[in-house]
Amino acid sequence: MQSFSDILWVLLRIDTIAAVDILLVTLVFYALLRLIQGTQAVQLLRGIIFVILVVVMVSGLFRLTAFNWLLRNAIPALLVAVPVIFQPELRRALERLGRAGGIVVWPLRESKPERTIQEITEACADLSKRKCGALIVLERETGLQQYIDTGVAINGDLSAELLLTIFFHNTALHDGAVILRGGSIAAAACVLPLAKLLVGKGHFGTRHRAAIGATEETDAISVVVSEETGTISIARSGRMVRHLDERRLRRILEALLQPDAPQRNLSDWIKDHVSRRDTSLHE
Image 1 (cartoon, helix red, strand yellow):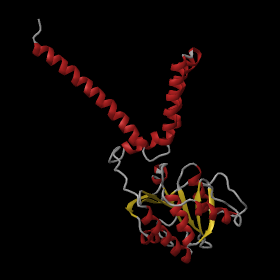
Image 2 (spheres, helix red, strand yellow):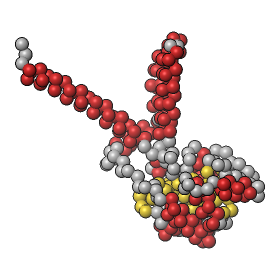
Image 3 (cartoon, helix red, strand yellow):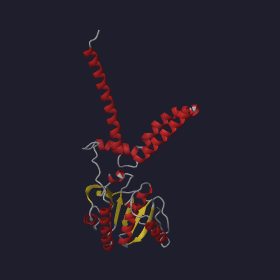
Image 4 (cartoon, one colour):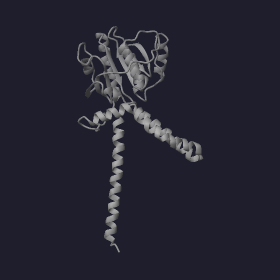
C-alpha cells in the first residue's frame, strides 16, 4: 500500500506537468498575438473568431446535422487558407525571429491628441509656405506595422521641428511617408500602397495617391502637403479634402482624433467644402 507521501508526490508531479503544459500553450498563443500586433491581421482575426463562435453556437443549439458535417469537412480547407490569409504576418514573424530582439514588442506610448494636432498643424503650415512636400499618416485602431517596417525607424517624440527636418528638401528621409503612432514618430521614408480608385477629376500625384491608398483599407488619417503648390490636404476612408489652411486642418483633426469633439461642425464644413471641390471626405 502506497504511503500518503508517495500519493502526494505523484499528484504534485501530475499538477506540475499540467501547469507546464498550460504555460507552453499560453506562451505560443501570446507569441502569435504579439507577432500580429500592430497589423491589419488583428481585425481579420477578430472577424474570424466571431464567425466561428456564431457558427458553433448555431450548429450546436439547433443540432444541424448536415451543417455540422460541412463544418467538419471544411476544417482541412481552413488549415490551408489560414497561412495564405496571414502570409504577410507569418513572413514578418520569421524575419523578426531572425533579428535581435525576437518577438518582444515594447508597449506603445500614450497618445496625446491635443499635442499631436498642434505639432502637425504647425509643421504643415510651415511646409506649405516653403512648398516642401510631406506625407504624414496617423495610425489609429488598425495597425500599420507592415508599412512601418518599410521605412527607417525613428521612435522619437513628435515635434514640428522634427517633421520639418525630415521633410526638408534633399534630406535622406524626404521621400516617403512619416507614420505616427501613439503621439510619437514611429518611422520615416515609409512606402505606402497607391490608391486603387480615385474620385473626382483632379490630378493626383504619387504622394496624394499614397495618402489616399493608406486610408482605403485602414482607419488611418493622412495629411499631405503638395510640393508643387503647397496645398494642404487630408484623407480618410479613401477620400480626400483639399485646399486646407492651418485653421481648417486643425478643426478636422480635432473632430477626427478627439472623441469628445463636436462632429456637427466638421460635417457641415465638409458638406460645404465638397460642393466646391473635386473630392470628398466621408464620415
